[in-house]
Length: 193
Image: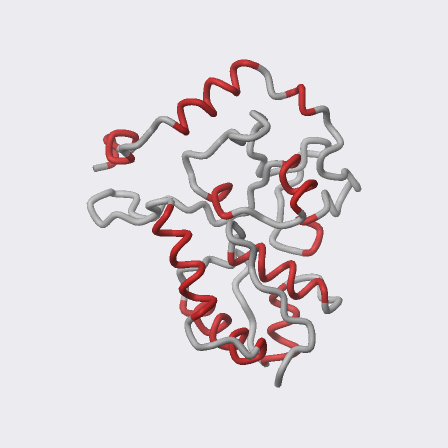
């Protein structure tokens, strides 16, 4: 089966974010509901890009999108390498957070989910100096990997980017600066080695 609408992932887009953007364009609330209906299997709610389920999902997507085998998988693997997400020497080998996190200003401008928000030590957006959110700033409900993630909170209706960008105060810009000048992740995660 080939899908008629075949968007490619943005260069900085996460696999779960791409999955949501693609499946919501076909009217599905989540990648899981799409996978069950179209491919006949379910996906985990965490949409971990390092799982057998997501490997199967990538193979199914590549076939349905008419993409060459491994093209999507290589794209997302390169993002993991770029951010040095895995190191077998660390106690915490994989520093990718499984639950969704966003910069509300970036996502309202870009309309896609960026991979770097999922890296554990990224707690402040480098562009907006605002916090990376894992819950709605209005009602405090934890974010989920579903169609609402790209627009705002599905519970209270809060829209991303509503709060002033000026809320990112000087304290957060110091965190942002520290994230940018940390070339040695071993040093950052030294306690876990």
